[in-house]
Length: 136
Image (tube, rainbow, N blue to C red; front, side):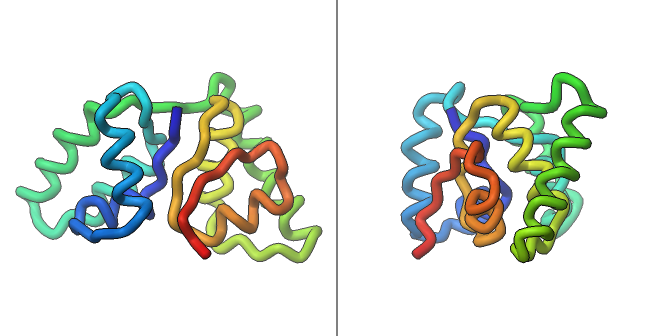
């Protein structure tokens, strides 16, 4: 099972012919193989160009499988710990949101499919993050 980051969904929606998009297309043949978080959902909706686009995105992604923390306070504390651990090791993470997505993948036992170097940086500090990317 995969938690699919915004970075992959955006390339998919833009019709880009990239390896991570091809991999996502394969995964989509099994609808229970992919999921998103509420933050990923929000980021996708923020990319809408107009009201009609917003409605289409909301309709499609609102029906996706959502993953979230079982205990919100503990999940957010673990997210903050990832950010702190990265900072203490000199690893720059541009977005606390990426730490939240990473922690959700860890807690849910999912592989994070992404196209974002921040997740590779996080994984270098947090070995429990199972991530898949096609970045070089």
